Amino acid sequence: MFGPNPKAGERFVLLAKDWERSSGTVTYDGKEYEVNYGAAFAGLMVDLRRIDRQDRNSRTAEGRKVD
Image 1: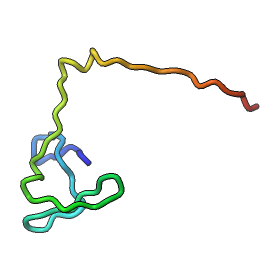
Image 2 (image 1 turned 60 degrees about the vertical axis):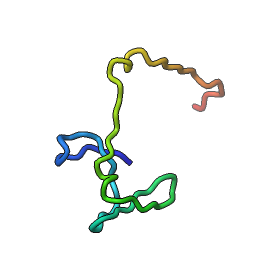
Image 3 (image 1 turned 90 degrees about the vertical axis):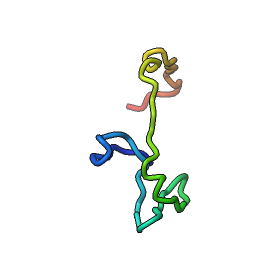
């Protein structure tokens, strides 16, 4: 999971459940994985120049209305 880290200038970085010395525990898809300390600096990058050009598809599901 990624989230803002005040120590990294509010950048979105990898968040681990527990950090112990040189490793941490992260949960992905219901499974726990051990990562090394360097993974704490893995950041999430989003190309803001393309964010407005993303296609968005939406639809209304057909069905019955309940009173």
